[in-house]
Image 1 (cartoon, one colour):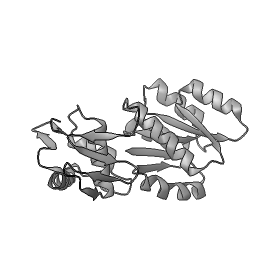
Image 2 (tube, one colour; image 1 turned 90 degrees about the vertical axis):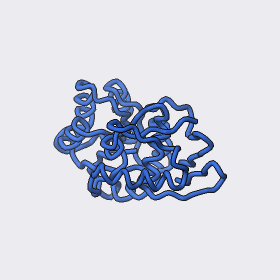
Image 3 (tube, helix red, strand yellow; image 1 turned 45 degrees about the horizontal axis):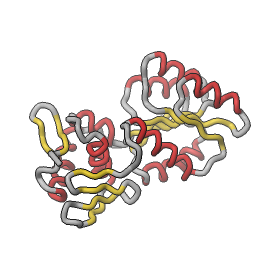
Length: 220
């Protein structure tokens, strides 16, 4: 899943990034409201962490502009501990959840996880298809023979995205938009290499290629 982290406190950013990456997120970072508004409007994200006290353009204004332009990714706003009015204003402007500073990283991750589940219409994180089960916390997959296989970061993100969209054909471009981190070259052709690795581990039929369209999970 691709995450936009909008926060100007670099010490907080540096402490959050390792935990977010470990949880399987590919992260893009903006440290001001102007860049954040542009990125959210022009690129694809599965969720956003949005601080309200930003230079350049306040976070609340960023959120309002996104919603006015029908940018509908889930947004978790960060507010000062006692600023209850910011929470109310943020929710009215279209935020999906909020978290007061300071916060525990575990709570942030749990709230993000819930937002992503709701986005894809899932009640929980139990992902299973055709005898294959993905453990989202361990980032490992159990194949149809019962073998547990650890996944690399990109392998996990690809499989997670496909299993969150079990009835959808996903193009290579869409997959690349959701799995690469900001410092990685977003090359959709490399996706095929990772798809083949997953097929070797899970069976050739588990991921189908739809010529000219992309990939989808095989029939269960």
